[in-house]
Length: 215
Image (spheres, helix red, strand yellow):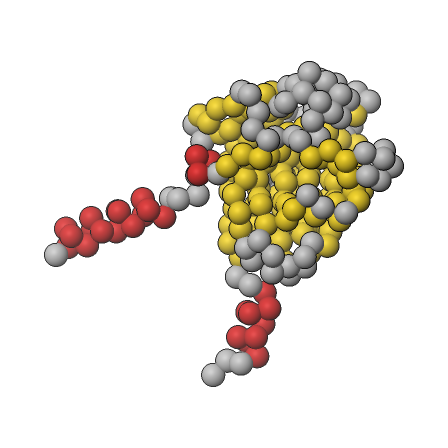
């Protein structure tokens, strides 16, 4: 009996390891990409981006985005290492409801400098940046979705995280969650995403209700 129990426990543990890059899917699949050692590397498609209307007067929705769909509240994070070359080369997390409602956050190369960049789109896009003093080999980006808000953080060591944006996003709506790269001006670049993880968070309103209605 004990042997059978142990076998079932091992099988259950293996089954629980279901959150893998291989089970995600592409929106605008790039020509070259691979998954190796639990990391995704892609060659970002040239002349692609995500942006809607404001300031520039155009809309584009054609950059590579590798995602899975999640409902409810969650925390997602990833480590990003990129070979950025020209203006607006960028890579990071993307949280997307549809073509008019999304957040992209990560590292962006602008005017020869590395910037922590967040674009929030609700029909039209806005853009906020935090300029870095020097190039960084990699960056961690984390986003937490709670109720109708998404908090975005950055870190250089996966230990200390600093908030870079708090943005509204409709709650109780399924969301595509994953990684993206864009290359509006250049001929493409390589980027690697490591340690991608989405962690379910208990629904905050439900937890509050349970506390108020505890037996």
